[in-house]
Every structure is written in C-alpha cells, then in structure tokens.
Length: 292
Image 1 (spheres, rainbow, N blue to C red):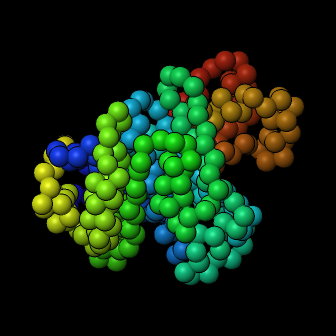
Image 2 (tube, rainbow, N blue to C red; image 1 turned 90 degrees about the horizontal axis):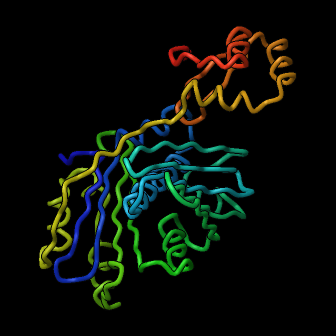
C-alpha cells in the first residue's frame, strides 16, 4: 500500500522535464469532513486539492497559494489554500441544488478560476483565467499557457479506496532555461496520461513511475508529507474583531451576549464575551485555549 498524503518530486535524466506525484486520502477526507457536500462537489474539491498541492510544489519560495473557483451557478465558491509546507485546507459554498455527476460548468455556471500567490516576502500575485477547460486540470493548463509560463501538464484522478475518498495526481513541467522539445514533452505526457486512479491511490511512488516510464531514467526524490491544517486561531479572530467599530461590537454583545466567530475551513468556534472584548480593547492578548 502506498504511503498516502505524500508529495513526490522526480526528474527525467535524459529530458529537461521535471515531475510531481501526489496521493491524498486523510487530508482530502478532513477537508470535506465538516460539511455534507454533494458527491460532485466532493470530487471537485478533491481535484482542486490535488491541483493546489502540485502547484505549491512548483513554487520556489515560502508562502501560500490559493486556488479558487467562483461563479453564478449552484456552486457559488470553492477554494483550496495551501503553502510550501504542504499544509492544506478548503471549503465550498453552495447556493443551489447540485445533481450527482454535475460537470464543472454545470456547477460553477459563468465563472472563473483565480490563482493567488502570496509569498511570505515580496509581492502578492493574482492570476484570473476563464473556465475554458472541461475540468480543473485543463483550466490550470490554460492558465500556464496564458501566463506564458513553462509548458505544464496536470493529470488528476479522484475515486475511493476501501470505501474512503481518495485523490491523486501528477504534474509534468519543462525545466526553466532548458529546452525540452515539444515532441519529448508530448511523449512523456502521453505516457503519464495512462495513469489510473487506482494506481495512484494504492501503489508506492517508485512503482507508479516504473509502470509509466520503465524505459526512461527517472530520479525520485524524498517525499514531503501533505497534511490538513487550518491557520485560524483565537489571536487572528481577535485581530479581525479589532478592525470593527467598538459600537458595532457592543451591539453584537447586547444582542447575543457574546460574539461567536466560526471558521468555515475547520469548524472551530471562537467565542468572545464582554470581558474578552474589554480585554482586547485594553491591549491584552487573547488566550488560545478558549475554543468551543
């Protein structure tokens, strides 16, 4: 059985092409655990999760990347956020019924894909791409083409193993400042396209690579663990509250007795009562143990 929830990087010795392989089960299940999403939305979030993991691995800096779908269809919003440590989280917002087997376009309607890259140091970058592909992988390939970045292909699979949802994917990308011919890249893409979901979900990475590229020389590097982690905290909620006018906070306290801040990503609730709010205004740090 493969080690799930790991990202593997690999390199072709005879071509100027690099690759990535990721397989997720636990992380995927935790992303969808707090909501009763329709099956089509669960699948879409799995695809987006794999895509985000693969994209974060292409970045050469510390920081975050967010992949977001939004439109006027029954799926109002779907977003996955990840970082260079492969810590992932995600959520979807529905505004209508979504039938089983719904396509990306049926779910999102008139919409677009937004990719936001936020380095810890440096400028934030945002790219917006129309939903011209049939699925997330095709839309992201269009994004790479339109932004004139390195030739890139994504191969994403979703399914289940032993009754539990699983997702996996692979990415191929031409190395910068080196010229892989179009024929060479297409040849490797054709081989990679044959990957089955079951193979990605259940086989060790070295076996997957051997099955696909047994006539090529491939170097496989040490894997990186992928985990579900939310970045919410009581302190962050307190910072957000402090941006509100004091009279607005006072009104919320009078109406409800406390202010309850809910994290959509992980389901945590952070509750602030009148004493907590008074301490915030006096400059006291919130204790991080008051999670309900």
